Length: 117
Image (cartoon, rainbow, N blue to C red; front, side, top):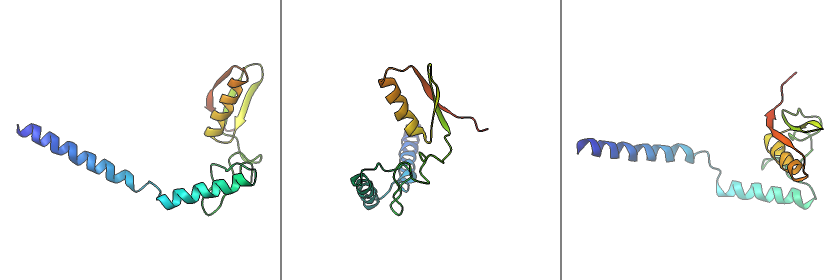
């Protein structure tokens, strides 16, 4: 009986600590709203927001500093049969590119990290 009580107490304590440690990382409702507002502002100009956009500095895809900018390194790659590798600036854009290539009927491999030379 005592063992069961101690086990239940330990589980409740662990659950309380797990909930507390993660709550500091969540953005506030105001920060989430401002992020969405900035993304809408950029999209109203006919551009897509970059994944590195912040509230203070909104960036569009392809602008300097964005992972998909032409001058930025391309650390992710996807193999396309009969074509070779396609390179991408971030993991999310590589996954989206892979899906688009699959939809066009191409045989593609998994998203991989590109080797630095």
